Length: 346
Image (cartoon, rainbow, N blue to C red):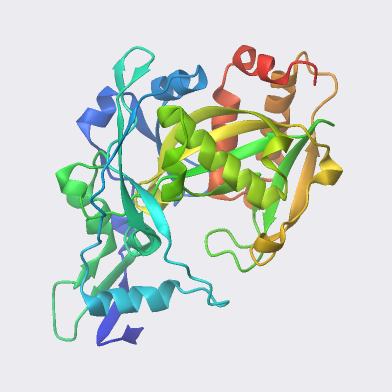
């Protein structure tokens, strides 16, 4: 494919293996997990960080007023915009949250401050979501743009904000799975217009954080919760008052999206399954909802949730988006005893 004088060459398959992990991240328990039978779907995550988040750990957020600007040549930006523009043409370059540090421990159960700065939607699309793209100018041996090198310099997953990783957009996002009052796990069926997971099952809510979300109280955990709440409202057609509680399950970075950061959460709703609907604003990207009943004979609500998650991953793995697979993974790893109080009386 040629556009603006540039020629597209897919990144060689031998370069798409999982990169090395920065030793600083390893020291905080981070490692790469790969999804069975899907070689391109891997998550960088930390069991000890996730355990701290599950038990309510938070930290201050430090916000920069200096906006991030992705440094790519105008011809490269034009090529990437054309490549990523969906068929329906909806491509809003809104203000997003760029994550400038990883979720790290300062002591057992305590987290370091999270550094953030404003960025634009295109910054992540043109970096994290272009990991598999290289572009060459006519007659040149070296690429004008190399998405893999941009996101994983030296074939290494560096900490967000490390100077060696300073060019990636790294827009912070959140995914959340929710349970209704009549014990139904809510899943979203993405429409074929979805760029990332067309026709697949997704969490009850998932998407990127808006810079306005940073106004939420509660530091790191409050920010993750706010993004999850907003996405849940939008994709399930419910009001904020219909959401009883949200618990952060953990954090990770999608390697197939250039190490893009994501929080994963669980929500209890105060409404029944029949009240879930596709909001008008989401009809282009959401085809509908699927409701999965929780086993009635489980010893607790937390255990029932985990049984339903395990059955879904066993029976319907090919239907799952990346965000749903890893959301359920962290749900399965959570201590049922920590989840149970959230669902008392369900």
